[in-house]
Image (tube, rainbow, N blue to C red; front, side, top):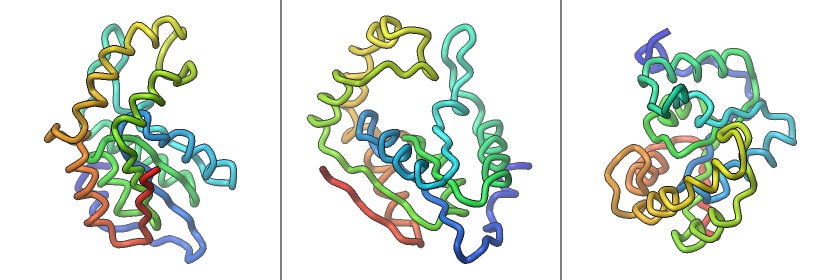
Length: 171
């Protein structure tokens, strides 16, 4: 399946709940998504399909991640997909029924990043995660001024273009 194959929405049962959650790093996307998943939605954290971690983290080609998204969507009727990747989320958005934009103030995201528990699906240890903290804090702080797929402007555009039920969370 290619990115172009994902352009036309898949027919879905009227009761299907398909949610995308996006925002800055440490905005609470994973926490929000896990809460939704606890209500019976399959959960996909885009960090798990966006990166090739061996030996050094490198972003996978868009096409490779798009195929993983398509496979996840085909396997699950009800789902939540979360991340900060507007390019990947725009693929999932074509099939989504709801969108949550966690438009949390940068200062709050910075504090949450400092208090983040260990994420074993991303780091081999809490120490390895903490070693990356200064880089993460600088990256979070740049959210309003970046112009990439991870920026506030890209998330705002994704939110504006979304045609289903959408909610902006600011605190």
